[in-house]
Length: 231
Image (cartoon, rainbow, N blue to C red; front, side):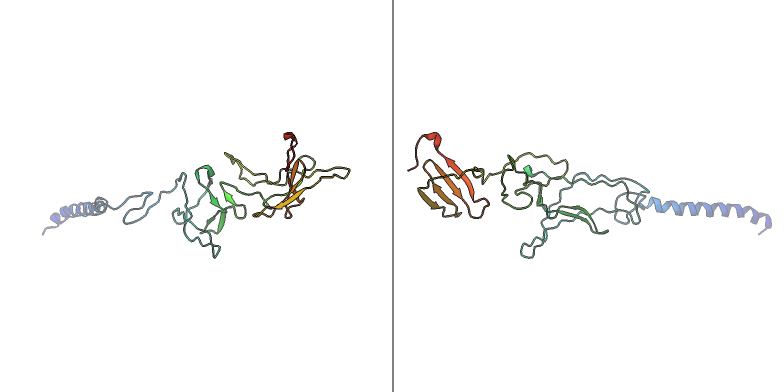
């Protein structure tokens, strides 16, 4: 083969090898290799360089692991996946309950397990979303000083909206106070068979005493307006 024919064939071979390399690189893309995506595919999980995520409202039903005998509370898991090595910033969290619709939970504790941080802790504060008792002693017992008693209260989260409030006054009458002795003639007495309270009968009134309460006089029924005596 002559030297002139060889020199002409060299450039053609270089062009052919270049086209072969380009076709080999394009074939992978044409074969369906997943491109960059923020979602999981069958083969790989790829993440964008940056982004945001708004989960909206998520209802967690804590129904697993409840054991009253061992004092174990029920738990629920909520998994959020992030890219390895991602830096998370500008994070906000809101907790929403609605006792009127039955959306409540008893002493919830929201924990980020991977970092060991308590995000929300309501332990020792009763039911979040409803309350059936005062803070402290229940039932609450106190005397008016001078015209009010402010020792009973509830602990509510900020921005809470109260839709229904009901409470029962077990001892609405404060004992009579006087600078002179008060004489109340008593004619009969009977003890309640269920709660043990003592009912004392006067001429036109009935006193209710409870030894577990301080003061012991918890109620007074006065029948003066009826213009009649109790028989």
